[in-house]
Amino acid sequence: MTARDEPNLSDNARARGIRVAGLAIIFLGVGAALMPAGKGLSSDIVGALLVAAGLVETIAGSLRRDVRTYAMAAGGVTAFAGLLFLLNPETHFFPTVVPIIAWLLIRSAIIAYASTHLTGSVRTWMGLSAGLDFVLAALLVAGLSITTIVVNIFGPTPQLIASFAWILAASFVVNGLLLLEVASCHRANEAQR
Image (cartoon, rainbow, N blue to C red; front, side, top):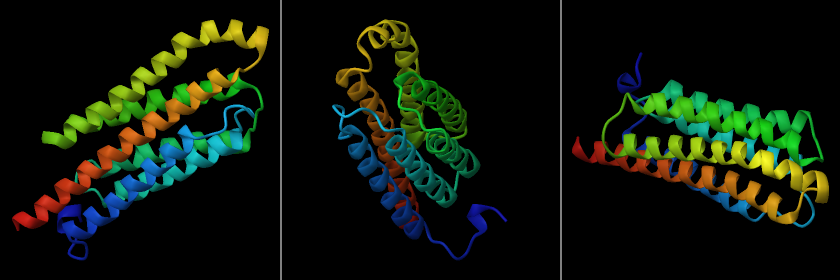
């Protein structure tokens, strides 16, 4: 049975669920942006944010009509990255950067591929989300060599940690906006019926 054959869930119900998920992920992005940089970066907080965002994204993905499997996989990758932080807590900056780079690259690839199966504004927003995650991963990789020197000499500075928190925030906010666009399209589909 495909999503189009499901009689129990209207496009309006899907839109409401996806809209709530989008707003929740944007809220998590604001939380990531407000992480206290002066006290160090807690892998527990990062892990909890990623797990929460991943679970919300997976639930939202299950409500999608198109690219459901890919949307759920992107959420699963996010939740898995969060679990890595929770199960292997580190107080140093570098062990936390590598899983974030991997998470951004894998999530970017999943969303980019899923976007090839869509058209219109949702495809555009999926491309933006995938592109942003790729650029953020590239920035982390490029900054890693310079940051290695800074961290080895001075330790993880508040500015460095704050920029890392902003990377999480940017990815979450764009993903939340993508979900709001998906919700808008589901609502428009219901109105056309």
